[in-house]
Image (cartoon, rainbow, N blue to C red; front, side, top):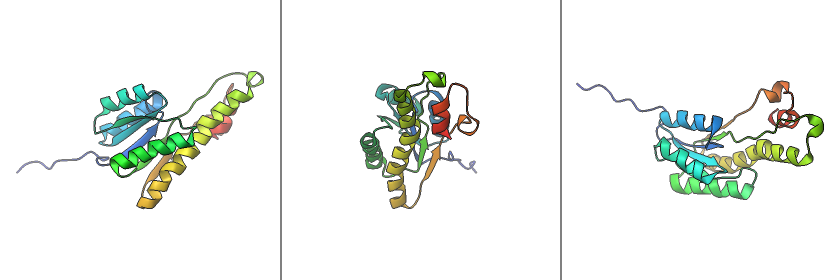
Length: 163
């Protein structure tokens, strides 16, 4: 009698990870793929996203996505749904920070940090959730930061956006 075969726990799952071409997002994508998921590596850098996805296997793909641009997010989500038929999980990981003293920070820096860390999460969640609700299933995971709970020196706006 042959030994039973075991499938990876995330086989047949389609998971979007934003900001997944480097850093924490890439680590998340690697782990999910190792557990059998098809990962959509969504990142500002289309080439790095494609390269990362290529290394993952499992039919993973890399797509360019600016999380601050709702139309771009909607287009990325539509491409995922068209290609795979569904989205099982969204991981809101994309983030950005500029460490600097509060008195040296500018409105432009605040706007960029808030657009990526806060509005990017809103854009991606609303876009993906529309399809998840229609399908009757799905999950959203948003990566936070302890800076949002306790603050962090030189990161006033980042702490506010992550809190």
